[in-house]
Amino acid sequence: MNDRVAVIAIVVEDEDSVESVNAILHEYKDAIIGRMGIPYRVKGINIISIAVDAPQDDINTIAGKIGRLKGVFAKTVYSNV
Image (cartoon, rainbow, N blue to C red; front, side):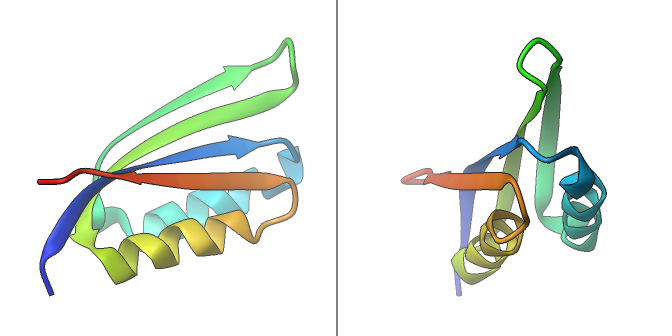
């Protein structure tokens, strides 16, 4: 299967889920190109963007695992490359 380049956008509204998000990202660290996290204290949320290069199934798995966490939302945008 060919690797895809994508960005996973994550919004964490439940502070208790931050550790679980980080654990999932650590599990797939080899697929991660880069990561940017912004704590938006005014709204009490964390905004994270993850650039990945991996098979589409792996990218879907990462986003799916993260999106199933309590108070966490994830969406993926794929490159055409």
